[in-house]
Length: 368
Image 1 (cartoon, rainbow, N blue to C red):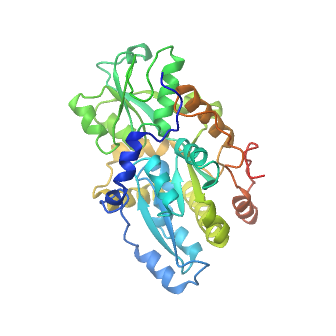
Image 2 (tube, helix red, strand yellow; image 1 turned 45 degrees about the horizontal axis):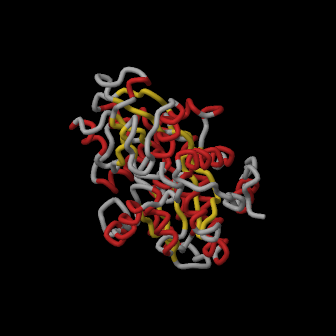
């Protein structure tokens, strides 16, 4: 195996080079049109310390806190006259680069790119300030070709992007089976095929992949095409909980605009509360947001099972982030990281305390 290196690779740099194009493409990095609710609140509310806050997230159900919070105006309500400028991305490395460049201020993102973004910048650019979701990741396979775990050997399994959270999880799982794969090339006892979530279902239908380790709703899209869930990643974790989505912020933005960060966190906490209290309405809201981003709503046979597999919570489940970092090191995609200081949960705990909720723990990885 090649020497360990950061998760951001030459392939990721190609994505970075195309970032200006991504930021103008429909649904992926595109600035979304403000809803009537957002515009109305922004017009009536008082601005905070900045005119707008640039927020990034994925068009995935694992990012439904952002989807619903923006769709329903719950985050905008807390921001008052400070407007949201939203952008969406397909995978974490490109969103990290947007944060690094200042194109984003706050983002919903998976643990692996957050770890890589933090370590690559020597702990000087981002902080994780909240959790958002757990679960919602599955290994879905072609049941005609793969009937048990042992049948995965020799097959082609897709992940969203080299070095993203699902990619690291699959590589770790492969290693646990005693199989070998070169992490960077994806070649070995299993062929790991990095495939954009948007085209993974078509790749499955064409037979160019035999399965995929993917987040929702892509996993349920594959099931709707005849795929079978071979493994739910939650079953691999204690208490079946693992961080799949965090909220991160540029450290400079946190320092300069703590009132805006706190307002976004209040909106996130209130959105998660609303989602858990109104699951059917929240599911419909998330689906509407996805329809606006992609031009097509998810059918019931996709969104219903997908929605049930994701848990929305404020706790960042910090101990599981540390474990995921160990998995990336083991795969050869990351040098041994120093994650102390990756979390600053003080603003979140302030919000949680004010809402009468339990505070959360940073597992010893908080700011000193």
